[in-house]
Image (cartoon, rainbow, N blue to C red; front, side):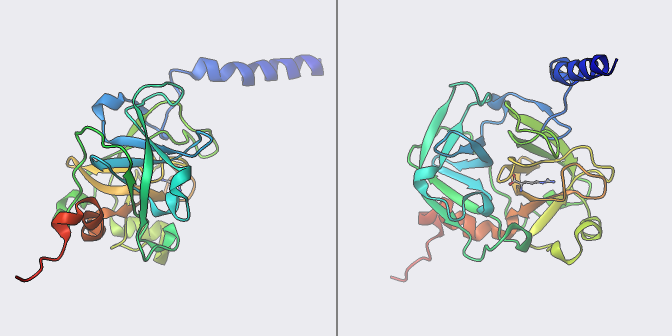
Length: 261
Ligand code: ARG
């Protein structure tokens, strides 16, 4: 009798992932999309091939990701995978990393400045995603629907996704984010997105990946309490704040201080 119950329980646990294969929500609460439709969405792997973060292609050889993804990491232990929807596939390009710039004021994601620009040793075709500029404040307006993308975990305790997943989340008010995270939420350095009741969110492994609003890259996945929890939205780096610093890395020749003749 007890053995029978155990067997039924085992069958249920082992059998369920197969039964769920088409209905399991991903990012958390998202769904699969084709990488062709989001050609700027890339992911980072280490020398063992492990996908540890996401990123956004903003130029032929420039990827915006989170500082906490690459801070202290050697360029020899990071690759950027482009145009590969299925992590177990061989599509696309695995580009080496030539340089890693981490915002000089970064210490930890919960203190802001969680942004980095990775320079590739290969140039990749576009389209790239345009960066939100300081005047693009409307893109951050509360309740604006934003897109999150990644190959990260599909639940707080779950494993990473094999495929690219997209979710849609509203930008929250500063008050909602402060209600969740108190003084840790820095409104100039961060932006929160998620439903009051949770359900859709980025999660572990999505870090560094894009938050898109109005066709522009407005944020990079940074941190949050759990994933998709009611009352605890995801926190993203507010990239418009770091526009000049990022642009100086992406287009150094255009950002150089003009010399007087
Ligand atoms: N820090 C995580 C990472 O490194 C991202 C967490 C995002 N969490 C959230 N609840 N939105 O992948």
